[in-house]
Image (cartoon, rainbow, N blue to C red; front, side, top):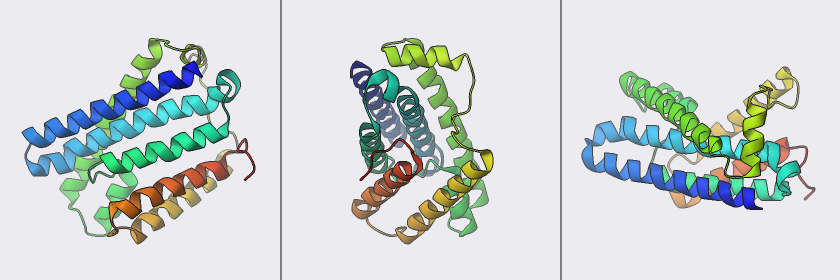
Length: 210
């Protein structure tokens, strides 16, 4: 479980760093610049870094770390709870940004700025996570660096089936977001976290039976 503890420290450090960036940019930047760019960049960096680390745990953890899908699903739920509580209104999702534009809830210039911020945040997440992996603080990260030299797809099914499942999950997620658009975060955040966890459970053939 030492590898899992190192990953938990990474999650906490990522949350703290992105939260500090949000607070600093909110204090220093105009409200429009913060809403359209800074919080989207911070949210995308936070989400991207956590997803990369979580994917590493999902691929290597069961056979090298000794923990099962129940641990991974619990992490998914808890991480999305924290994301929802700390994003400060950011979507950190290009599809959501485009959806808001198509619904006439955002201007073209604002949408393009949000997309650029999200791309920048994801690039920062990749750099941050790879630097963290390079430190090899646990056996899981040593194995991750060894496996990174041999590129292989994380998709454990055919491309057509994977695209169908991804499309269905995205459609269901966006329907949920639209339904809960004006709801209080107290209800929206747990609902989205539970939905994402349920979809991860359904899509993982190694998940334990209910």
